[in-house]
Amino acid sequence: MTAGIRAAEYVRMSTDHQRYSTENQSDAIREYARRRGIEIVRTYADHGKSGLSIAGRDALKRLLDDVRSGRADFTTILVYDISRWGRFQDADESAYHEYVCKRAGVTVEYCAEQFENDGSVGSDILKSVKRVMAREYSRDLGNKTFIGQCRLIELGFRQGGPPGFGLRRKLLDEAGTSKGVLTRGQQKSIHIDRVVLVPGPPQEVETVRWIYRTFVEDGRPEREIAAILNDRNLRTDLDRPWTRGTVHQVLINEKYVGDNVWNRISCKLHGKRVRNGRDMWVRRDAAFEAVVDRLLFDAVQVIIQERSRRLSDDEMLEVLRRALAHRGYLSGLVIDETDDAPSSSAYQARFGSLLRAYQLVGFTPGRDYRYLEVNRLLRAMHPKVVAATIEGIRAAGGSVEQNPATELLTVNREFTTSIVLARCQETEAGGRRWHVRMDTGIAPDITVAVRMAPGNREALDYYLLPRLDMNLPRLRLRESNGISLDAYRFDRLDALFDLAARTHILEVA
Image (cartoon, rainbow, N blue to C red; front, side, top):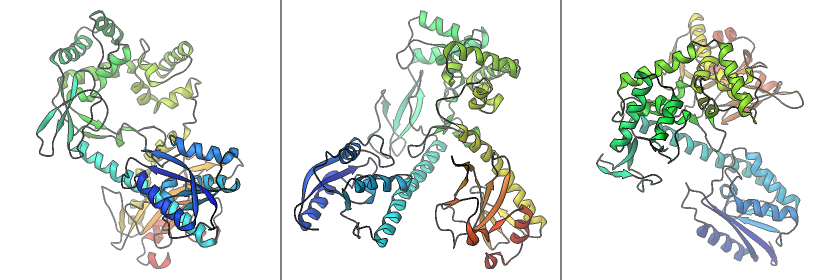
């Protein structure tokens, strides 16, 4: 670099990466600029912002807008390293934002990286690798965090969210000694402290029990109970009037019998919120002191289930149509607030998902959620495919053992294999693509990738992918993938069984 170059510095500190303080980044960037005779004329700083997406990163948005509009009075952007530019979950997004700058005549330099961002082949390769590494760091951290949260749930500790009416959060230290009750909005300050639920004030506890007794013994519906509570000038835990929906939530939530249930809904790495099936819930029964007797709670659930069971599918859908005509849209909350309607959970149980029920009454949500339906079908199909594979290998004369925790298969006591289902996606041009997520966490010797046929109801073909040849976390397949990959393709599962039953499979692969 030569003297006289004007630059802007971009610094970012994420909430999970405190050692990269913006001050430390700026010090390193300015030392880099001093050695190369670069003048820093602008600073763009995102404090406490995740690098998973550009959402919420106002400084980066402002920087890119200045570059695109021509307002930038600099020709270079200095960033500490690739990860500070972003840990985008699509590595192409990171490259795209850099390309936007390059197209406008503004270069991006990474001051702490061991290569020059000069457009050479080596530089481009290293950048691509670093971008993937930055992405995988976030994914690996997310997986470790999720596993840790699951473990805490199974130990009986509360993970996030308000306690709800009639309950409170109690803080425990590492030895399990109480440190007091947390007020609304108050958070623990020490990482190793834990939170459990305890009964709240006696008046709230008695109100919860009254709601259950009134629903079961007096047969009063949720809206009538809500009206009585409001007449008594009682408010919810959010200091709001009671509604049919808020009463219903009290009646169906398992925390009132002391059960600790988590992962009903997940949203990983700033992705979309996904409602998980019961098989993915993480739970610990009798984790907390119960507010309501379990027999009374079970009686409530039976009444709620029977209330919808008496209705035929057509009758349930007609109730949904009336709600749609009245409100103009549908949601779980709208359903739970509708008089004489089954609960949203009842629609899920009857029709497989709320989305399917919406489809049957002609309602389309603002986003395309069809992929959720496909993923649900694939999750349900996966155990069947694994079971068929085990049976087929044994029938072909091989031996196979399954790890119940990871579902990893050990064939002939010689090698391990994992089975993944790849959803078929159609491009706007009519082509088909499959994204195969490799089980890098359990590192199987061979991954069996099942490419689903269009519609994702049945398998199209099968790929045998040895770990030695496939060391990426994700593999993208097209309709035709060339000779090297096609050597691993099988049209029928029984051909795969025969090969897997032989002891020299690794030599063949």
